[in-house]
Length: 149
Image 1 (spheres, rainbow, N blue to C red):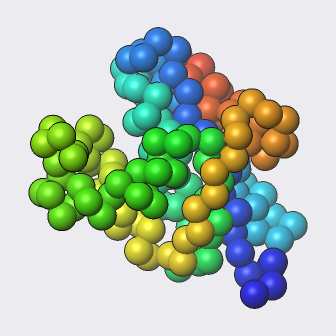
Image 2 (image 1 turned 30 degrees about the vertical axis):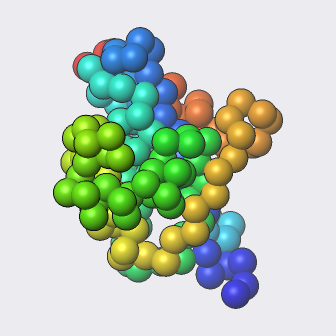
């Protein structure tokens, strides 16, 4: 497949205190076009913001697309690729029988991922990856928005 047929979605979440004020950021790239998104919540967790970033990025797409999601969150990456099928089979329970945290967001992400052809990529955070650094800056801007109300 040619590169121009793919949307690259770079996502990040941030939280000042955990729980605390949080933000999410997304950089979308399709060919030469880019779009930046960010938002936040006054009282949240880092994991919720990591999930929200991907969800909001996918929600912003106007039609079904081929999407490469790039995240520095092992929670998101392993959750969607490894843990989710088992959680669903076990009635949204972990292997230890506990209720899955952030189930609402996992269900939303699972639904959105089925509307697109998604490839999941993990990138090391804070390692000089330019697009990940931009997503991180957007997530921190989201924290600032959440703090301002």
